[in-house]
Image 1 (cartoon, rainbow, N blue to C red):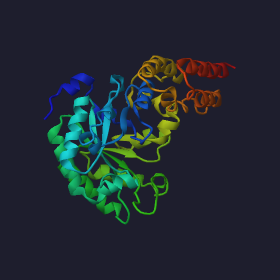
Image 2: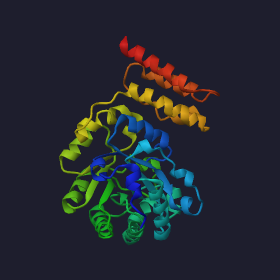
Image 3: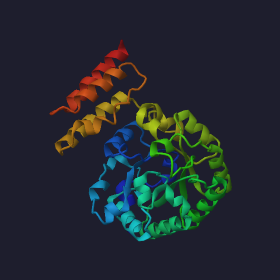
Image 4: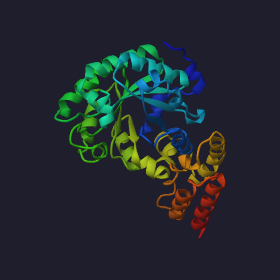
Length: 341
């Protein structure tokens, strides 16, 4: 077991409360720059990394993939893999890096993930998932959780999902996030798997009733904070929001703290932009490019006056050589001028 200094470093321990609302792990989207922005919009919401594969950390030594900012807490590391020993070592590296939670991906349907025998294909091997969970729990003192689908291919979710949950619960997993769609490993692309298989929210609610001791979060198709709150009010423990939180972050996250957690006040996206400026300057001094950061900010004013100018200025200007925080300030000034008109 690693020692408990991770908790001391983060100053954070109430993961169950934080998991009432979380932002989904999304490849190529929820990197450290995205998470820093989201944290400025909500102090409470649980944030997830992009999926990091255990082989990349353990065999490849790609420890730079674990870098994050202390301000991101509470933040969880999502791992991909299927070898219990390798996942345990990757979990150890993640816990030592300071993550508050280690999450096992059992939901991604991409070809690359399938070829590595992890992701959604693990829905077919609940015993192996249980072994992975056990190995990680024996190695780290932070929460070990699972994100899964309701089933894959010809599986019957009403039959396989309860068995899957029973196995991981017996292995010591106390929190699970269920993407309320099947994944079709053959015949649908990863993008199609996010939209075409029908959502079955009622099955997830039934699983919460059947496993009252499990902390159950719902993922898939949730587009607004009001929808998330409705599922919480019906008895689910948490809701995970994906694309909506990325494309319209202010709509989902700005009111999250008072609406979901009963604390704080509605945050201001313009103020978040101003708070991003020192962060941008620091990252540029380390060699980052402005567009690597601002690409996550394009939807910040979605639906608001000046949103088009904001997107255009950042999209066109941030990739230019020498672009810096002053471009973001100029774009924000355009937004605020439009809003005042």
